[in-house]
Image 1 (cartoon, rainbow, N blue to C red):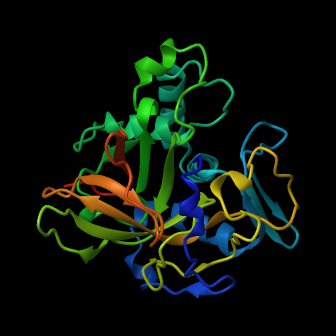
Image 2 (cartoon, rainbow, N blue to C red):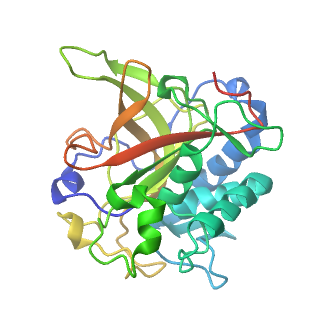
Length: 303
């Protein structure tokens, strides 16, 4: 995803670099997405270096590579999730790519679906999937499970028809959205009170240059925290993911675990997100946005 205002990057990092976020029992893994979760864990825990970047491999795919001494990942949020789903759930990924080609024909610069494309796909799904469906919608964030994927869009990036009528992205919000892999169940942080929505914490494994809430013990699998924010600088504009070169140090973010907080309404529908303890919840008026959740159909259908 693109960057938030400068204060977002000043959030205190409460993940221990090089440590592990210990997990619940592996027996709790939903069987249909076990390979997806275990692949994500293996890459994350094998990382020797990662940084949030818009770099692409020579074949135009996300730059996530296995080397003799481990893994490297120089990618953004959509590159990370697209790489995982493409490798482990190719049928589901093919359906999303088909949707990208049909609904976003001008997205030719990107060889994988960006976050707002994933969100548009999830937003159009029903909770009762057809027999051949790749994903089903989860409308109640309180019911998310490991292996679910949460995506959101912001501003004009939520309107496919509007995007296709524009000649360029100039003038649009630089923050197109975000996408992440859910690694555990949602836990309530605070109840609804005096007009303030209830807040839930969701353990995630994503690619980001923003510091997250801690997720100690919340992941269904143990996850090592490798990503560093030493190269991000004091403000959101001090790091350019387009200019990052693989192997460069210091790094800024990248693939790693954490928790993201979500505001939900009385039905559990997600209304806003917060990366870290010093961040505001977004979207906030007059900002527009939409958060959607998809579940691979290899799991039981959402309630």
